[in-house]
Amino acid sequence: MPKKKSVKKNNFFSQFKLDESYISLIIGVVVIILIAGGVIFLLRSNRESDTSSLQYKPTIEVEEGSEIPGNLPTSYQIKEGDSLWTISEKFYKSGYNWVDIVKANNLSDPSTIHVGNKLTIPNVQQKSVTVVGGEEKPAAVPNQITGATYKVKKGDYLWDIAVRAYGDGYQWVKIANANNLTDPNLIFSDNVLKIPR
Image 1 (cartoon, rainbow, N blue to C red):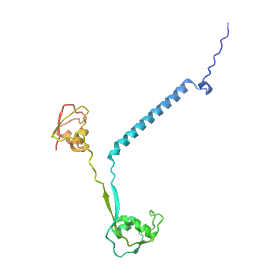
Image 2: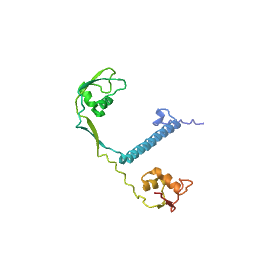
Image 3: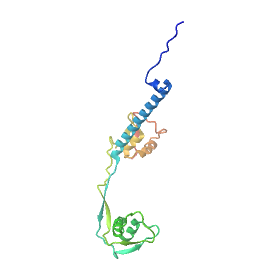
Image 4: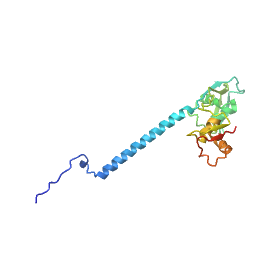
């Protein structure tokens, strides 16, 4: 009987002595990690693009006022519970003058003041704050609903209808109550809903 020749597999994976099951496991883990990374990337990019139009960015300007508090300069002994802001409010009726107190006392760390220490309160003008360009513009509502009734279209939800009718999605409850809806999640195309005003 002739001897069988043993066939030796000479491939990349045989060098590491890995079975097919381990190779499959490794490939599966890599695929799952790639899919999870892709999903996370998509969710983050969508969230950033959706909220960029909702950001409210007013400009705050601190202006020197015309009022100069009397009896200044003076000294003040720090008490328990004091902060530079509250001390500034006591003397200037504005917390924004805390910066002047820091400068007058050459404080290296304005967040740390100690009870019993004395501060020089300088003779400076009161600072006031004004908000410039901070008008919040209401977002444009596409297909705004102005009538007393609305015919439901495919894909409508009470939330969307309330946003278009009132500018506030939480008002969907008004619409549900006015139309005696037993299940507000169930509205059908071509139904006519009352929109209470």
